[in-house]
Each structure stands twice: as C-alpha cells, then as structure tokens.
Amino acid sequence: MSLLMIPIQDKDSKKYQEKSRSQDLLIRGGYINQSAAGIYSFLYLGMRTMEKLERIIEVEMDKIGSQKVKLPLLSAAEPWKKTNRWDTNGPEMFKLKDRKNADFCLAPTHEEEITRMVAEFLPTLSTKQFPILLYQIGSKFRDELRPRAGLLRGREFIMKDLYSFDLDEDAATKTYDIVSQAYHNIFTSLGVPYVAALADSGNIGGKKSHEYHFLSEAGDDKILKCNHCGYAANEERAEGRIANNDLKVTHETEAEILMETVIQKHPNLFPPNFSVLKSGLRVSNFRDPESPELVVFVLHKSNRRPSNFKFKNYEDLKELNLIQQKTLSVDLLKNMTILIDSNTTSRSEIFYDSDADLNIYIVSGGFTFVEENDGCPNCHDGENGNSYDHALELKRGIEVGHTFFLGTKYAKPLKAKVKTEKNGSEYVQMGCYGIGISRVLAAVVEAKNDADGIIWPFKIAPFSLHVIANQSQKSDDVIEVALNFSSRLSQKLDIDVIVDERIKKKFSSKMHDALLIGSPIIVIVNGDNAYKVRERQNEQIVDMSEEQIIDLLKTQIGNIS
Image (cartoon, rainbow, N blue to C red):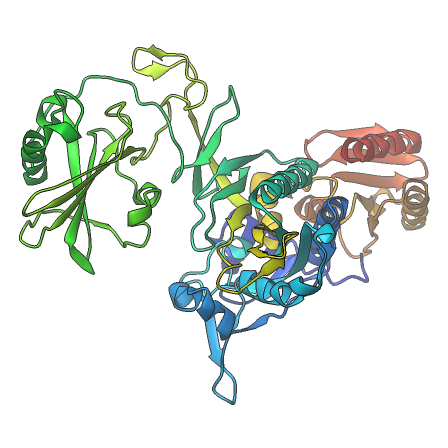
C-alpha cells in the first residue's frame, strides 16, 4: 500500500462537508477526484471497482448474445434532427460547432447514432442474424443545471447502453424480457436490495419501460410497491385503488360550477346521476400556453393530485405542455377535454360531443398520483375500512438502470428497414437498455455504508481482502509475515489482496483507512499465525487461524458465484 497513490482525506476537512454521503466517502477514500462541478477523475481504487462492475455486466451481455461496439462521443446533428430530438432535448445537451460551422453534440445517449449505423448495414443482413444486440460501455454527457451528489448527478458519466433490433414486435418483446432477466442477474449479484418499476419513457420514448432502483432512503425517486405480488411502479406511473371514503364538499370553484353545467347539458356523456358538487370531486384545469383555446379538465377525488405524466397516456395530449391554472378563463375556450379519474367512476369509454360553441372529449383513466396505502391494482382483495388488504408501500430509490421498448420510434425517421420473405420491407423493432455504471458505484455506497466508511459487496470491492501489518506488536518480521500470508491466500483462492505495510502509520490510522476504503474482510496480522479478523459489515473482531480465514473467504466467494 505504501507504493500506491491512494489519497485518503481527513474527514473533518471543510472541503468535503455538506456533500452527499457517497460523494464524501468516495472522495475521502481516494476513489475519485473532483475536476469541476459534475466532473470527476477515477483514481486507482475507483478504476478497480468500476472494472469489476463492468466485467459483471459484460458476462451477462455475452450470455444473451450481445456484441460489444464503441460509438463516437462526438455525434453529428443530422440524425438528431431527423428524430426531432435536436431541439427537444433542451439545454442539457452539450452542443458545439466545428471549424466548418457544422453542428455536433457530446452524446447524452446513442439511439440516433446506433440506428443510423445499423440502417446502413441492414440491406446486407439475413433475417437469420436477428435479433441483433449491440452494446458499449463509455462516457455520456449532460449539461446539468445544478450538478450535485457526486457521481449521482454529474455532467459526465459512464454508462453501459445496449440496443436491440428485431424483425417484428413479438420478437422484440421477447428480447426485452431476455434483457430484463440479464438485468435481474446483474443487480442480484451485487447484493443490494433493488426493484424493477414501471416507468415513464420520457424523452427516449417508446411503448414500455422499466426503471431499476437500489432501495435507499437517500434516493430522490419514489416507488409504490406491493409486497404481496411484487407490483412496482415509480410515482409517475403507479396505479392503485383508492378507498371509497366519504369526501365532503368544501367549496365550489368556477371550474367546478362550469363542469356541473356541462354535465347537466350533456348527461348522455356521463355516468347516470353523475355530479361533481354532490360527490365531493375536485375539478382542476390545465392549459397549454401555445393552445389557449383548449382546456383540459381533470375530475378527481379531493384528496388526490392530478398527474401531468399520466395525461400523456392519452394520445391527443402527448405533445402539449399542460400547466395547471389557478383561475379559469372561458373567453377563448373552444375545445374541452375532460379526464375523469378512474377512481371516481367505473366507466371507461371515450366520448365525443359538440354543440355550436364547444367540442367536448371525455376520457376515463388513471390521471392522479397514487399514494402509500392505496390498494394494489393487481391483487387487491377488497376494502377494510379506508385501506386495502394488499396496500401499496412507498419506497425511496436511486435509479441505476432503465430499459425501453422503442418500437419504430427511431427506425422510421432513420429508415432502418429490413427485407421480408415476401420481397417487401419492414421497419425494425428496437429496444434500448442502459445501466449507469458510475451511478451504480455511488448508489451502492449510498445503500451500504456506516459511520466509518464504505461497505463494499464482495463482488465489486477494489480488494477482497485488506491485510494490516500491525507493527505495534513489537514483532520485527510482522511485515514479512503479512506479505507472505497475503501471497499464499491470493494464490490459493485467486483473490486480490491489499497489504498495509506502511511503517510510519500507527495501527489506529491503518484501521481507520481500512474501514473507510471498505474491503469486505480485514485481517490484522500481529505475528506468525496470529491473526484477527473483522468482517466489514459488523464491528466484531475475532481470532482466526489461516485455515479459518480461507474457509471464510471461500464462503464469500461461494455466495457470489
């Protein structure tokens, strides 16, 4: 260890106060170094840990037949403009011009580039070569307005991104499921509790997506989860059953009075005897500033908030930038869309009507945020007072992976077609699948740490074994004993070992550094056959023989193999 550059920092340094826990520990432990806001260098320990994680991912990618490629970090603007994402990505995209004034970006993701490349080769491929799965591991860039929390929200980050190409939607769905199983294998092997949650597709797009979260109170994301059937969804997508408790009418807003008038004028569009005012429902109204003639009304229970994310499940509202209004102006009103939350009525049809002054669309569906203790949408057995037998539980998580079933979203604008057996051609069906490698490292630290430092899972720890030569025992040959002991174990078990043989460091300082670095097993060598062992996940230090230490390591290795 005396020959390595591991710049361990004083925990009382003001420089590292008020950081996230992972940022603090990774910097003080000598894993990363901050270059600028949201930009970090990976040092020796950080690289060892990241390379182990990458190897776990590569093994699973190989198992499902993926081929590793390397795509450029500098991406031409043309494919992005064809998919209409050059302008819609917003200020988070790093854009630049070359000396010929051509537009480029530092790629935040690679859907455009991979689709452009594959489209070029598709005419030469046989249908027997499908599915095609291509992945890479490399840097991505995002100009975060406020980079924070170290590796959790940086401006440059390391990702594994996989892209799949299939001949039809059924085959693409099977590929999606195969990759999902590979993700399950990857995250299970790390030993950190995680959940795969239904998610919104966001700017990436597509028909289906799942987020993968490490469960941690430090997480920003909220997940609603059923412990009975395993249903899980992020707050934006979660569905649930709201108990039919009585809600009192507390006020009558202008929007609610208008809605009551609409109901009375068009009773055929609503359930029998339907009333906003008498049933204690709220009416929230939304407008797109660019389309002031359209107002979207949401009818919902007064103890629930409308969700803008869920409005986009309705095709005609996907492209609108709907903003909730505090007041209602009817001067420009020509088109009215009424979203009736499904927890207010069982009616599910879509209706349309019009009169001389107004076009009316009515849609029923899930348009409000679900909350903890609402009933699971998949397995609720019935109400028990104001709760359900299988209630949803709220968990906090850190997103570490995301999978998307894209369909033809990118294939169509980039003309990624494949020849069919009937001499025709079809657009390929795509999927994309990401894991934030640098983010995983930080998320593991957020989930697994104590007051002394990091507690790495055995499989990605920079060193499986941390050996301390305790010179305070007055043994002249303790360093040699420690080095020989480490060499024997490394050869017998094929594990990586770090030895702290620093002469000028006191034992207390060595133990402090070992706990901060976080190797899963620490062995203190006091002399020949005089070993004390501390497993990092607990505080107990016990005497062990070399044979017992080998058995302990074999158990750890067996648990991850």
